[in-house]
Length: 204
Image 1 (cartoon, helix red, strand yellow):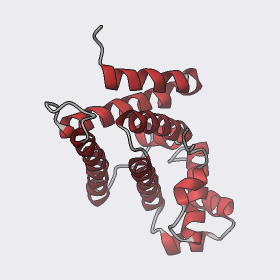
Image 2 (cartoon, helix red, strand yellow):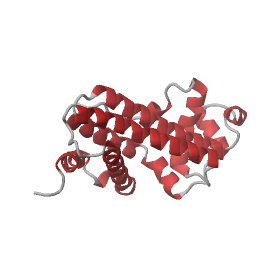
Image 3 (cartoon, one colour):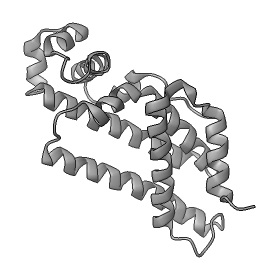
Image 4 (spheres, helix red, strand yellow):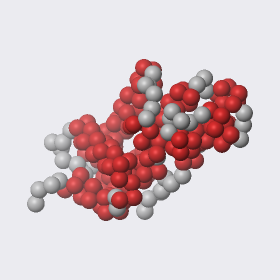
């Protein structure tokens, strides 16, 4: 039913072989060591290249970490765009969006944990980029919901903007639960209940 996003390497497609190699190695080292204990030398070793090559692509460990986060977010947007194109009904869209988002959060939880707890201050330009990426995600869902509304799959009195904000916020909150509880969460049951709540609400 759904295309799984199961490997870190999916994140690093279409960005250049060497750059992707560095980011993949950085993801491994940051996940294992945390941001502050990770060393460029360890990342270079994991990538099978010298430290000098790393600095040809990234000016510092901080820039490397920030670009890793940006690439992970971009990869999520690529996944979202694919779901939007491939799922014709609102119910299937919500089910697949929840399922693949939750799987994605599980697969990236080590990096996400660093981002939440153990990272340097983010540059203003990178913060602005994150805001733009967040808005792009929101708009992607808004566009889908607008079309669902036109097809009669969504109530006329519901704002696609507000519905998108609630849907993406709901998924993000469940993602935080995956960060903290990991394997304790039953993915299949979570997706089933999430879809039911989104489509049918809470009341009897």
